[in-house]
Image (tube, rainbow, N blue to C red; front, side):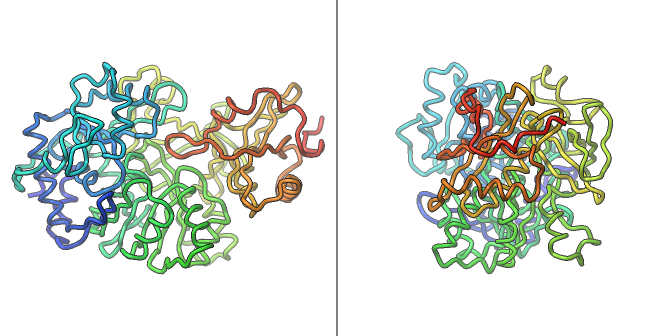
Length: 549
């Protein structure tokens, strides 16, 4: 039996194991390619469930993972929540002090860790009182020299492949993730079984990211980033084949898996696909099986959408947040746009899209009024729905600031067009206010990155005595770029679409745009490292400044 009739996770695996017992789960590991079936996976999750129970894990306990994308990590996705415990995925890219904080805040009892990440975890745990009483299991068949940890295969060995799955309440906490903590300590978000069930079902709709049993699904987005955007649950519910790219996959690894395993759907942040595009320019790449690429985390440049379109691969923009489990919107085309010309379709596909069924939203301006859906007015996006959290874990001060009457204040500044397509123009903390007007740093970044000789670009507002703030662009030039002429070429590109007061006061060249622990551009680091007041006169014409009128 599935283990209960409420909206819980167990029925998804029960269906996959019983209807698609021979469908494969493929995993790239340090030891090579591992593959087994849903039937064998079902047995392994039962063994892990028995092992967790034998270790003393009880209902309500939190079990953490510190891992890349692979089959053993996937086993925890169903074994931990469906015994009544809570799966807490930890981002290993966080600084030590944040890791210490969230292990303590979550009160983790057991941590599963990859061998390659054991040194990082050992460093965070060294002499840290937050780790007292925490046990470790290393995700391998052998011990690690870095941590006193039980090898995973030894941990599950000898345990029965049968388990009496309990009937759980749908409001039982099943998962937990923390925000990346760009300001202050990370904030914990709990997901109940009902939230993850609802998120999975909405994702499977045609307005979400639909998957079918003939699909081969490869989440490149890490499993510690909001459960790989829920894709392990969605692919299981669909009875699809899973492919996990393992530790730190490079473009060659990703291409090889697409070609060898016949991947049809994959997902990752834009930098993943930019790397694949660069690799494809110098190598013979076969993407013929690939139907859909999902891009989230930050906006995909228009050139990327066109590149995949040229290869008959649909690029879908998706937007969401840790607080939303995470899916909120997808850039699916409405029926009325299916026959529109390509440029009209592209105009909508570049946006973050339409909310998926179940999500309600409104956009509030500085006067606490809802904006018009005209594609021009700006405001902060507020959302609510069955898989949107209503509070942070043990953070009452953050709850007062970020929630109101059941609405989550996302902190994203957006416009909404007449069709209801949402476009994120900035984060509230990153929007540039110049001379009483708003400038979207995101729009400028995407426009600059459309230049063939630009690899990355981030735009931030710097203090200005007269205009309050002015935009400055931080650009990573391509290998063969001539920076002596690139300034003016970028400015010419921007002049085509933007008023002169939007144009950056300066273009500064840097080796790399700093990234957050989730792979997004870290404008906080840019401001701290570069905008120290030394940028007074820019490298672009004076005409970029706003008019006095």
